[in-house]
Length: 220
Image 1 (cartoon, rainbow, N blue to C red):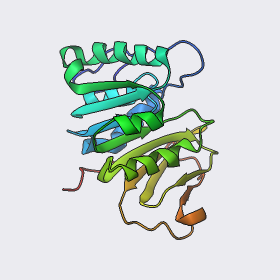
Image 2 (cartoon, rainbow, N blue to C red):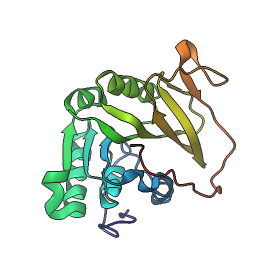
Image 3 (cartoon, rainbow, N blue to C red):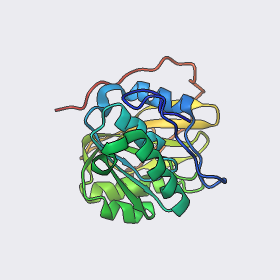
């Protein structure tokens, strides 16, 4: 794996050995960032399930300001640090904060409000998506109109808490990527509403061939 674009383009990314980490493929990562577009510029980034750190480091290479990257596995944090030092060189200390803990503890410790959030937990942790978003909203950890990128198994049923709106979903084989906005005060009602007003992310026909659409800059 390598950084795809930006100031660190072409620099190598290493992956932990074993099956606990499921790195986002270069193809999916490239498509995601083509869609995010300029939203990444000067963003404060949070990745709660860092794995290799590839998503946050790609964001930093493309102009994000800083990143907090968390993972509960010692080997993963070691690999993330190795990748971050290789990608950022002398900027590592000033632009990246690493947290070795689970996502709940990371949310309590991150101490910032973020513009761009990546959520890619192990597929067996389907409840972690909604739980993490609720916790972040409760501590004011998200800027209004924050963009959240969720990577999940395409067949999974995921519930979004109130205040979050999924505005696009892309499918890549068995993987789906949802693009979600944080809109405080949004009431999730309507055809995709789940229990207690939560929004249920549903499986749509594959659109891997659909042309990427760029979603512009953050409001304000």
